[in-house]
Image (cartoon, rainbow, N blue to C red):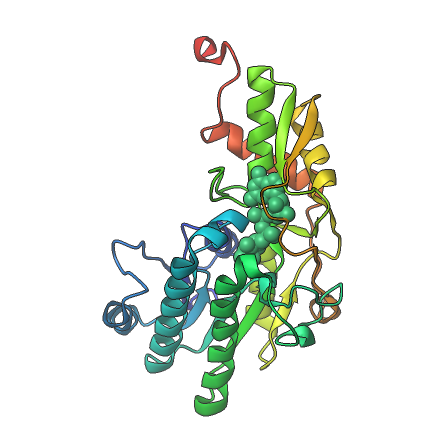
Length: 319
Ligand code: GFB
């Protein structure tokens, strides 16, 4: 990867795509190509082919995807399956046709079986039934991995795939119906604190275990893979530490300063009981995450306060 390469970041307005763009800019890459949905809808094959033929990217980070938390996945199965299949098929094929030198497709740790061994090795793919709340998204992401491998096998394309664990950070979605757990909990404890409430509701039992990677660390890992990895097998991207949702809630409460109690809404799903990826391959290649969970939550909370969090009482008069 050279500073003069023409690099397309697909999905630059999303959490991961935005972080990849920041990382490339910080490292001096000058020819960065981006496009919002109004300019090119990646679900549209003709528009996607035209875009690649005109822009002629040499490298592609495929971070465009329909994403969301456990409830969004469960509520919009058609969107999660159709949108993601179309985006992946159109971008991978257009990259092949236009002669892209290398492509990195971003997947998700939800590709693995619900009861996969922990931490989950890459070899666990397709060894058991998927978690029902996110099987639609998982099937689309598994198809994305297979597209990269198929275009490599049939056409010799250098298309690789990385499977990040649960991500969070600045630019995350804080909408309570569609977000992932970490931004949802930050928002809930923030609003409870501002409004003087003494309880916050957690979905599910609080017992599931999750691993959380700060999004700028994920972007750094993506650049590392783009620079150093050319293989057929996809690699997990994680930090190697997990905690329960109840522990995460307490950590968010500590960061925000919420002193109340958590109550559980067990009508909401738990999802996978445990989800931590095995990062042996990635770590053996010399990469390590830099941002510890508490520090990452503090940074994310500061971003949220600056981007639309409910103001503290009296804050409107202070400016
Ligand atoms: O982050 P999350 O939505 O997704 O939920 P998954 C993780 C856990 O947090 C679940 C619990 O056990 C939720 O029930 N939880 C507690 C909450 N309170 C809340 C809350 O207020 N909001 C949310 N969203 N969760 C997703 C997949 O699974 O992970 C996606 O559905 C994707 O496809 C993503 O793979 C990384 O970790 O369960």
